[in-house]
Length: 350
Image 1: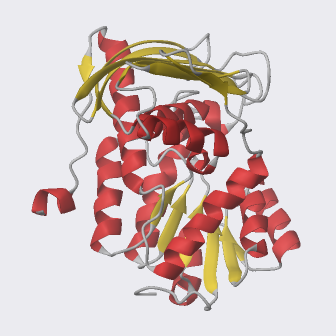
Image 2: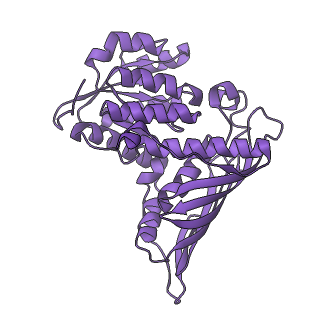
């Protein structure tokens, strides 16, 4: 469907990938006013049966049949599939002039990521990446403090994430490199990388990395040192990701040092300390999974209705892919690797 969708017109939507997360997100879509779920697709018969039982809409074993049967009546598609399939699924939807919500990571190949950015811009379609921390009160407050320059010019940052991930996902597609494209660095670690780059409004310049798989087929532990460019300022940063943590839910931390103070988020507490002695703990809590998920899906629908730009456009996802792929290369080569700049066709033409 070409052009913007009026705010009072129903947004028709289909889902590619209707496993557990796909169904949870479709429940939220259905609860948003004037959103109609039309169809679903999944390679798993069990997932299809569960989806049909819950939503009462036709469900197909492949996305080609779904698009062939329903593209003409759709406005958008929500894609929640294994990482290495994202490009194939998203590009097929964009070619049908459909807006796309795509769970993270955008892709596991930089050329594919840039191709999706270009295609969505060329067709004036919303392509939103599923980085929900852009809507979380804690990370919004971190970004607000940084943007206010309250801690001065940032010069160093460190972040970490640990999760009992490899045991929980043993035998799933997430530990199959042909479907996941990588391990924890591309999974929960992708959120951490996005958070660092987005809150700092930073571009990655180069990276070194030490990565191990702890005997698995995909990476489990990753330790990165990354040089960032923050509006011309050089910022040193470290990123540590472990998929062999002690708790199923991620435990994480972020500390950012500036010339006039620091900001930290550790053990659920957001603290700002300034060099002149001013110190305070921000009265803000991280939102739960459902709240953040509802926020990102509502933002996607709103962007479609207003012919606007998503708050999480695909360029964010492309930059995360560029850094992640460079980190894998750095680990393999044992050398510092330059992170490619994201140059879309639209930017070149301008």
